Length: 158
Image (cartoon, rainbow, N blue to C red; front, side, top):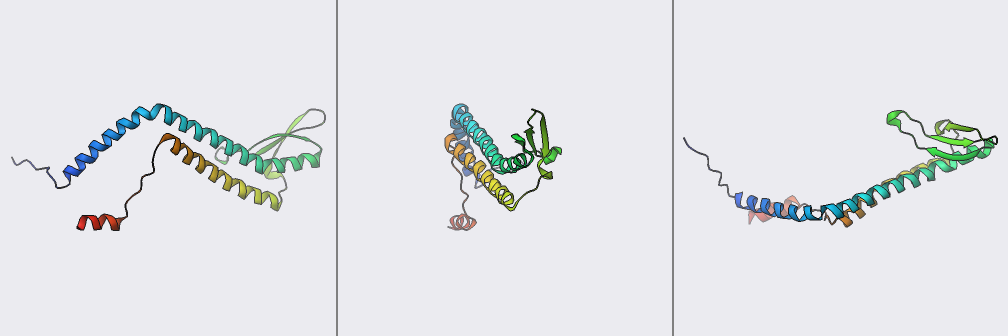
């Protein structure tokens, strides 16, 4: 029977691309352990730091204001998770040492709280993006740029 020919004009370029990819993968595998682990630690550490600081920036003033109004001692807060229906809460201690908690949604908020909320989200997005960027520098991964279609078409027409 007739066997189809797989000798396409672009097959040499494809073979060369696959060889280069295999060679570069071999190089990156040897560097994976230390650089990638360090990059992962940087991303996780900085992300945790950014989450903690943005939460404190937003929740601490709200909880502290309530504590001052109710003559309580502000201890800490949780940011809550809407996915699991866990509300954000403030934790307090009264003068007798009893602990109490109050949902942040039940507290009165000011316009300054709304501004802090927006700023905390901007800081959170910028902080996580910055930690990912820094980790990519540490890991040695270079961002790949795609050629524009116009340049790609022009080079094939020649």
